[in-house]
Image 1 (cartoon, rainbow, N blue to C red):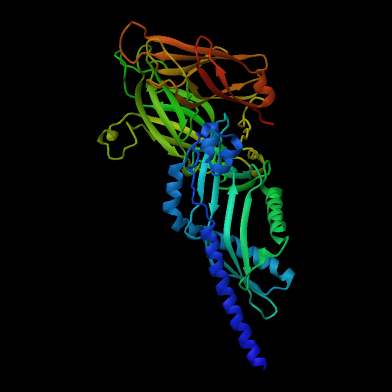
Image 2 (cartoon, rainbow, N blue to C red):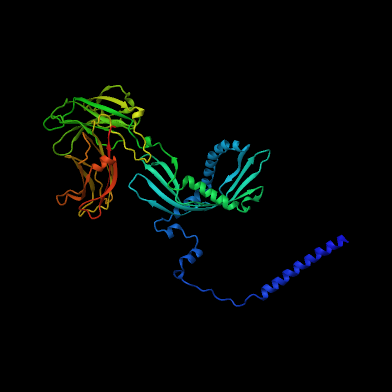
Length: 539
């Protein structure tokens, strides 16, 4: 009897379900409205902002914010490179995560945590826009906005108590707006020393976790708890102004800070060749370290003398003794016109033993090309005495946290005084009436220095450095800067014209140790000059 009732019950259930589906479909078709109205079409300008956001929730940042740039090229680049970036990122994640996991698992009595599989899927992140900040400091600041809704394949196996359950991460979504700062910018590849990363707002992170095939995030209350916990943990570490610092280069090497002092004594020259029509020469010597922007050191001029004696000493700051060399050039002074080159030679600093005085007699050559037959011709000799004194470790300039390190003045700087360093970086919006071939003329305490001219450029860049050794701080002094354009054509009409000038008071430089500012040029419509100045002392 029980079997019969079971069969009848199953039969009745089947008949009831079938009949219900037929009746439901009939009512759906029968009562469906046959009158279909055309949709009302309204211009977008008539919509309010709330309805527009509902209609277009994924408006890119470069549309919503005019200061964000469109970066379709970057998205295309990431799309093409994603298969390789995927492998590289996953390899890096494993390399970083595995040591941390091994260190932490003993606390929780876990035998091992292993990645069974780790890939980020085939869907790359999309950059919605990027904002780039312009500053007067040696740094580059970027704020990209990216969204990533990926299909990663992440399986993590946990070995504990004889079991090996597998955890799978699925449906990962990350929306974030980080600020990336590259600083300080240096003249060594990749041209920056550190990467600073911080988040401008809490990121949106969404993902699912499957344990033994079940979705753990479906447990009531767990999803929101995990979401908030991740946001709070990330914000605690990386929300601006807190940053993640990634070192790239050693700032001491990249910025080529001083490591020693080279004392050079120019003793004499012998058997120099005649350059003047009167049967004599007026020789002087210029000394310069390679890989250095500072102006050359010069001896006095010895008039009408082919065997001059100078016995003059110079101190030169060394930044890389393995690569730098002392360049020695002898010139014949001319009252009018270009000074004639009489000969030259070079001494690599790696050949100079530290702390050991060395007297060298060098043959003067036309150039440093070993295959040039003209170097076999005798041009005379020059005698030099060298002593290289490396700085002790405790006297090396300390690293500055912000990358704007102020070096100490070199040894031999007058006590109570210092070294005033002037770096003329660039100018903007220069405009000449007849030509624009700008150079900067610098005038300080009767001494004049000039940058090299840049032809036909309204926004020239020089990055030239000048130094003044002073007996006392220039608290009440001012320095005169004038941007001058010189005609590139021969002629007497408009050979030179001033593009603007500015006088800078040096009191702020002494009190702040460093300034780096743009100055509006007087007698110029929109011209600006970017000058960096440092006051270096030995203390």
